[in-house]
Image (tube, rainbow, N blue to C red; front, side, top):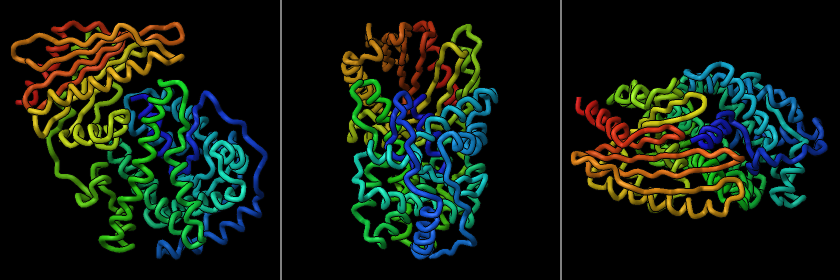
Amino acid sequence: MRYLVRALCLVLLGAVLFVPVRAEDPIDEGKPAYTEAEAQAYIQQIAPLVEQVTCCPFTKLPPVKLVTRAEMVPILAADLRPQLQAQMPEQPPAQVEKLATNTAEEMACILLGKYGFASKTLYLLPGNLLPLMQLAKVKPAEQTDILRLIIAHELTHALQDQQVDLSAHIAAAAASPDRLMAYNAVMEGHAMLVQEKVGKLLKLEDVAQEFADKLVGGVPELEDPLLSMMAKVQQQVYTDIYLGGRDFMSWQAQHDNTAAVWRMLANPPATTAMIFHPERYAPGLPRGRDYAAVLQRLDDHLGAQPWRIVRNMELGEMALRSTYAGVPEKTRTALLGNIDHTQSLQCSTGKVVASVTLMTLRDGTQAGQMIDQLEAVARENIAKLRDSAMATVSDPTFDTLTDPRLPLARRLRYTVAAEGDAKRFLIARIANGNALVEIDTIDVPLSDDDLLGIAKLVFFRLQE
């Protein structure tokens, strides 16, 4: 989940992130690849094409500023901070500030362009262009073309902001991670659609396709299997936000017209499931069961620890797709197709963490098969991690929790050692009817009775 949160932070800002690389291996900033005069010339060329493609004029072009990575960090942090505060209300302000700054520092290394919501300014990072192009193995003759497509993408965000006030919509969605991811998919999907159409007008279709491929598929193959697993989560978020959002917006335009695209930005889909199933689009949802209440105060049952609730939130389809990024596509599709709702309570003491996740299923008879599939993936991943130089996995144990009233109760335990520190992980999955409870802990000593008792309490509350 840590890498899922990190990847989500990186798409909250309406930015073009090129070739996501590891923060542990930042590439050096290069000399500026272009001047402000050259950037202004590109903007004067691209802006009319953006207007043509979107059937919407700018009220005025945004100011443009060429910045270094260091200058970009506080700008990024300022845009991130209010969204993170809304998503993590239980987190101390200092922790939110730290996350915003750390994310901004990492992001500035892989950023080529960014429209600032707060400043209404288009920022470009000329010192990143050549190092990132070289890393991505982009031909020198195509680097300026990529820059023009980036400008088209960011100018689209500026136009969106003039028409629908992006900051207001993001603020309205920020309390719900799923709703926020859906809005980011709409916003980024529209910008991807426009940049591709602008590329076609410039006769850069091949370059535009390469740009899209590298944008979401640019995580290089990493030698260490642990890094590869984490990178898959991040890559899945990018793919779903940028290309999934593009496909959603394209569907709306094809089944209605260009005006429908602007309606999506003004009245966005309520869930990420609608991004993958555009025919289900609705700007709001009828009020349903309050699943957050079902998980309330379960931290009292996680042992005598000074627990702090990090969040009690719905995990939508996009978050689940990323969580199960390492699961084969066919298996993942079947898993997600059987999940009706997922609610997760996440707790921390600062030293140890635990979560209780409730999944309501469309077909409870498939719960056993779901657990089998997830355990098969776990076995495969544990085997892969034997080749990791970053972490050592030992003592994997798959067993059954015994309770005559809950015949489908399974547990996985294993130890991960990294940098001289060993932690004991536990995953328990307990099913009853159309409900599946998953309990995940790190270094939390819970007995069989503790685990079964938490699940029974959830099942009892569901019947109330």
